[in-house]
Image (cartoon, rainbow, N blue to C red; front, side, top):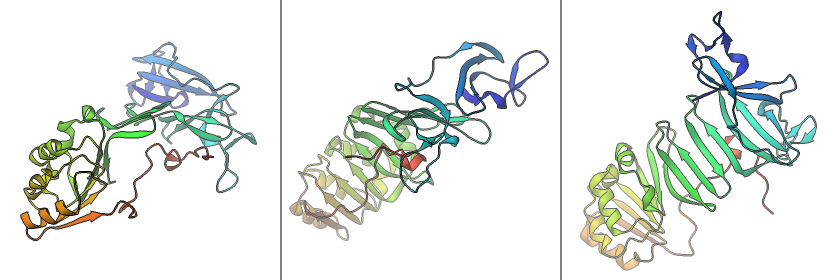
Length: 294
């Protein structure tokens, strides 16, 4: 279902709304001259069917506005609407009129507890609701899932689409079909307690993860028996054990014996993390300012 600014729709001689040459089906956002939202109307095959309730609830005393009108006079601080810290829900639109996000603000900062984003197709991209977070690939399959502030499932990709990290704290969210279709980066990371020895074996056999040359295992439940599974990885040349209760220095040395030429590192518990782990629920990376933590 597409989401468009009403001003980008054209009413034909037959009275129906069109986007380009096609009859419009979806939601149309009407804005007042001051940038506040006037209405949200649903349309089907170019015919307005009535007002739609499909929007985030407003915080007390809040407004619905075009996010392009929010100002931030300094490099960091609250976003202002008409000179005052903004409280309400802000809507972002592309130059072509597509609505791509709906974000709740309080006192000029994104609350990070109520937010929705869409692809230009109208397909959901991200939804934050209290302590729950979900993001989707363009085809509608889940990319990330967070509960109570913790990422429990994530297929984290680079800009080129290559998979660089699998986060798995709850295996029930794992979609093997989409995972098998992704190409992992040469240095790949797996993180989370749902990655155990059996899961490691499954991933090796059913996905291209089994062919990566460098692998990081972080806070997994892979045990000592997983060393034999790792030894059978096709191209493994280097591996890091970081925070895995069942994989210590002894297992690192055993892997090197089983797989000559492979270097196994055991990261001490008090060592600095080997790579930066991105914050999942950050709104700042998406053009919004998050509320500072006290």
